[in-house]
Length: 203
Image 1: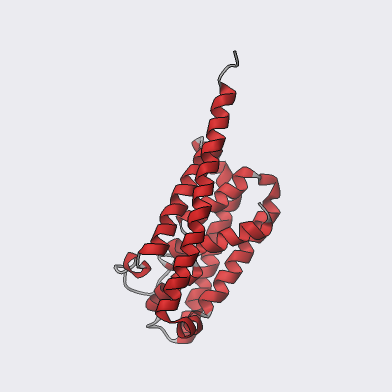
Image 2: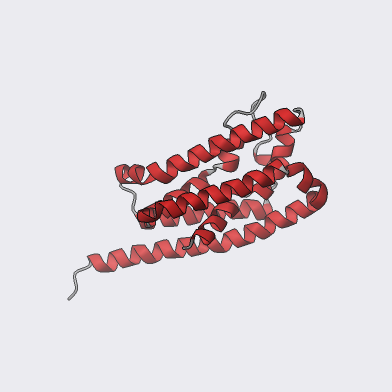
């Protein structure tokens, strides 16, 4: 996987376009200046969470004795569920009952930006090829920057595309993410089968 393909995968997983209606709904009651401050703060927190999982995730996997095939299969399942949500569900329904008050960490930073699928993705990237940590860092940073720009321009995109346009674009991204999820799941199964065949004594 190249830096570009990893960044594209992270961008699809972060799903900034699909998050636009939710961010507008949650931050709509704040003055524009304060809303931008909150968004920048939550973006920074989300980046910190992703980097913690990027650089510390493999040690957690070692402690929990989680194999690479297991992580790949689990990541594929999570991505597939996220993709289904992007295609069929109304993302605003998930956070309809968010706690009152100014959002802090939840739900904007986690799980809207740094959600389970994003955490699983960075874990998977590092677990497969830890020696390429600089490339994975750049991929995560690039996807995060692009997602941040889109969310900061949420009002602009909402006016240009409208609700129907945002929904159509999110569903298109969901379809792309579905194919990535299936590929990740199949690759995990392939790795598992390879481990099983290598463990069986040859006659």
